[in-house]
Length: 511
Picture 1 (cartoon, rainbow, N blue to C red):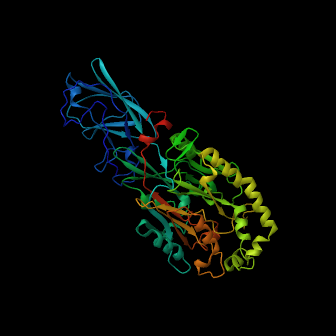
Picture 2: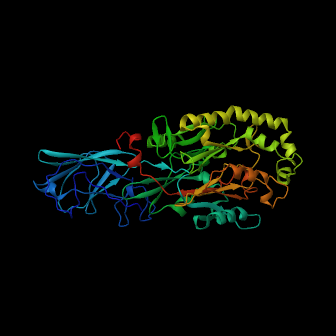
């Protein structure tokens, strides 16, 4: 829990005697919407009566000097709040008014995301407007420390044990596995949920956005994650397309675009021939204001998720503090053409039909496909990132990559090599370093010898200082099923900034 204090500008704590006349001026009181389930009864706290476990209300502290000239009256001006006195509900609707005692302990419960309102404190001819502002929901970005990484585990014959052990070795006590059989053999935990956070001067709530995809993992957020300090909520209902999966919902690190600072970055998601995440969710994300969502064209991809071709990693040496890693097929061909064409590729021969490096390089149809993808989609998306996120070429690392038409996808494509940028980015708090957990490309003859892999060597040489690369096996369970490491994992992150200190300019207020 974050514990800070917030008081009226002219108010001292009641324990500190003040002889000055009150100024009738107050600072805005910031809070989080009470959407978690502190008493674990399956009901969001803000929809029920106050419970003994409640810890998400904000105090309203009024200096004793305000009572020097008589009784005070408090009036509520909007419906999106509830006011408590000594633990008892006293106001919950616009127009409610109540005399308050000098001995009252007053608390405000916020009910809705990113909502403004006010209370009026009055005494005779004197009055003060007390502004209220609830927190927006902020989607986490990759520069935030990774508190916990989650994945689905099956240890039976033919299971994903190498994938799970790779995560355990890289992350230690920052990794938790859930039983795959319990959740319908659904490995795609990234696609079912997305973590966001809200903070106030006294409180932090993590919000799990639960997708409408509703496959095997659907009950997991409520059964494994929800409770005190963690809320689960779904926006939208009905039939889900692939873009409703949350590999298709990401946020950049903090950026400045023109003269506008986005201290929590900007949300981005993919559009596949007019299909995106559910419009109820896109509308909600737009309404949060602080991350100004951007839509990207992902039409060339069979699965159609933004995490298939782009990610962000910390770079302490950069002015912006990060680099964007993006797939580039032109760089891919430059790299593959630098290798011995006779080098054999057992994994690719068996599963992709390319037994040597030369077989890939000399496939003219494959080359034409990738040239078109680069020109029609990847280059325009790079320009979109430069325009919408304020990036320059110096902020971008181009990662070698090729796509192929995927079985069952018609003319749409998936990655030929395991998708490097489809990775876990797990900064470690206080170290300046980040674990980057990537799919083993197996671009080598000696399958069990990573040290001999030229692709691993090439990508490692491109990563920023402070990166700790880990290459783990995801070939059978993920890569061959058109997903990768990021698709099969999810990350809960620590908030590193307060919106009420850094993002009020995006909410129409002053900082």
